[in-house]
Amino acid sequence: MNLIVIIGSGAVGKMTVGQELMKITDYRLFHNHMMIEPVIEIFGKFDGVVVSKLREDIIDAFLKTGYEGMIFTYMWAFDMQSDWDYIKGITDRFEATGGTVYYVELVADQAVRLERNKTENRLKNKASKRDITVSQDRMIREETKYRLVSRDGEIPFENYIKIDNTDLEPDVVAQMIKKRFNLPGRGVTEMMNRVKLEEVRDDEIQQLYSLQIDSFMPLYEKYHDEGSPAIEPIEKVIARTKQLNRRYYFIVKDGARVGAVNLGYKTCDGPSTYYISPLFIHPKYQDQGIGHVAILKSFELHPEAKVWKLSTIKEEPGNCHLYEKCGFVRVGEEQKVNDAMTLIDYERKV
Image (cartoon, rainbow, N blue to C red):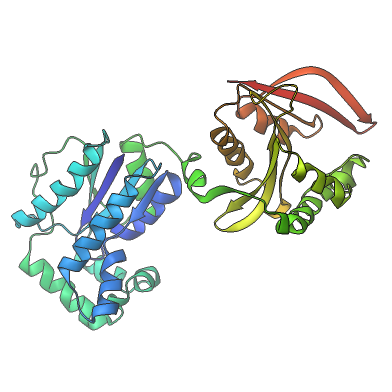
């Protein structure tokens, strides 16, 4: 797993740039004050030992996720050997996984940083900075006591960039970092961490049925297909749940049930051939990549499957593109349903 370390003086924009970088990559932001603020709130004062322990626990857990990497912010005192050792300890853990560490140093004029110290985003995320007079005096004292800007050539790392962001917006800086280190854009990793498949219980069938109707109704109103799941009786859904070789799963994103999928195999085919029928996402959650992730999670759920099959509406190019992106190819003959709608079959072989 990779690590991006953003370093710099107080209020230089480490957190804000990290927030923008998180929007355009599969990296998650762990900024310096995420642990500092809770500790101050609970203990009534800063406790470096507790903060460090909490950071270690977060990093331990994060290294077990499927994310591309972490964005970590830190105010590095270059004249303090303990800070060099601390950064090395963190970066060693990421490099031990085979990952790459990137170092970004931000510098800006003090007058600009003093203004940034008052910004809404900073005060929202850092309660300890809300007393502007105190936080400003602390920032100036830190710069007097420690050397917070590196000397030319002092940082020996290959993947290092120093950016003067005095006159640069955070999103511009984020794009510069992404381009400099050739970081991949956002993929499916984040959504894979946010979406789950949860098996539907018997007492949840009514909720499943309502979700199915709401999801398929726009297609029914468009094509008037008499076999549409939007108008099938609940008894048909119940019958599917009773089949031993089929299971319904809610598609859950961030704790909300946003759709469902039915997975199963026919006795005559055996468990090597699985069918996806139906798969649906509620209209208000469509076009977010959830369906794509639900299919990928379906594959993970049944590694024994050697062939996957499904059918979709030919006149819905978005659906066709989704399945083809997941590795499905068209097979068989088209099935004309009515003058407006045609069903086509898709198959994916593992």
